[in-house]
Image (cartoon, rainbow, N blue to C red; front, side, top):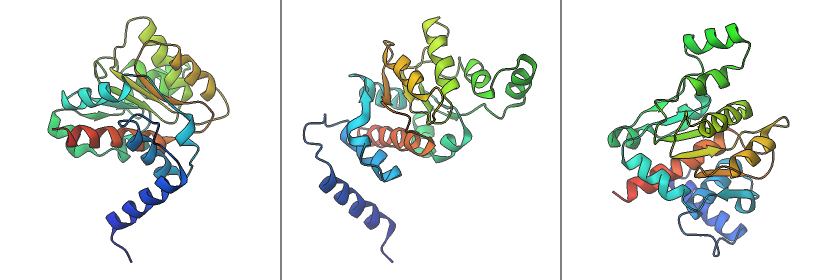
Length: 206
């Protein structure tokens, strides 16, 4: 059995043969490669969309010790927390917090919406990574437009047939730095891969 890093290296070599990223900005390449690696889907070479300042903004947020907020615990669990904590930040997901569950039940809204509302202060100048819930992305965009939430970067890549494409389109129409894609694909694994790629870039640039 090959060593884990050797397998990863070989995977990236295969990806480089399958897709041509020569015309892609240098900072975008490792993010696209990791998204493909996480999903086995080479379409991410063509449908990931980056705000011009997205990657630089994300790197700066991590190096400044800002938090990473996630919509679901699966995204939180996959993020490499060592470097984030070393820089002074935290990885936070409130979807299972009692206050979120209680508010969602009381007001008849999704926990994803309530969790975004209750994470406003923690996400200040940080990164929000949404890989599962379009409702979380819609709510975040609304909070940003109202001036209530001010993250530095939004990674909005929820998966689904209901609301996912519309939420991503709404994100692209904001002035907020973002990374998203153009179809209903996405998910926790993609969100994690993008965040971890940015963390790696921040760590390498110490």
